[in-house]
Amino acid sequence: MPTVEETADTFAKDLTSQNIAGLMMVFTPEGMMKAMTMQGQMQARAAQAISEGRVPAPATGYSLETEEREGDDQVVHITLESADGTAEIMTRWREIERAWKVTDLALIGARNPDGTPVDLGGGLSPSPA
Image 1 (cartoon, helix red, strand yellow):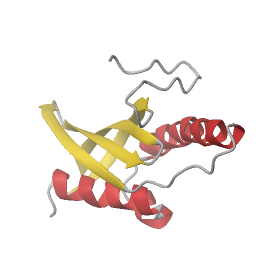
Image 2 (cartoon, helix red, strand yellow):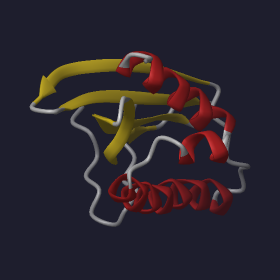
Image 3 (cartoon, one colour):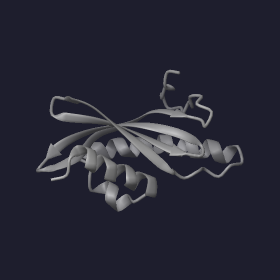
Image 4 (cartoon, helix red, strand yellow):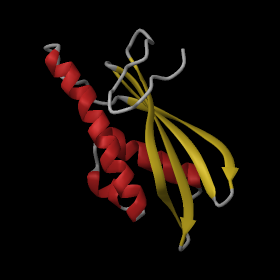
């Protein structure tokens, strides 16, 4: 069985390449509902770029940071990178039937290329500076 880090790495690759089929394999039903909410936040950022006359930049890279285990869950922060800046996603993983699954995720911060926080609306607070 792959480790949570290996599974999260594949998940991040699927995010950057927009491999929806690959992403669907790792979500629990609860995780899927959270992903749908997060997608709305990401679309808000894309709409902002379009309103400024820019084409939203695709993700070009990512980094992972594994946190300490919290009970049955493993938290992994994924930072997606693009020409538009970064987006930080918190993912919570749990081993279910010998496979790591995303039970929770949230967009917890976004920054412009110059490092300034982005307000994505919908109650999302910018990351601390």
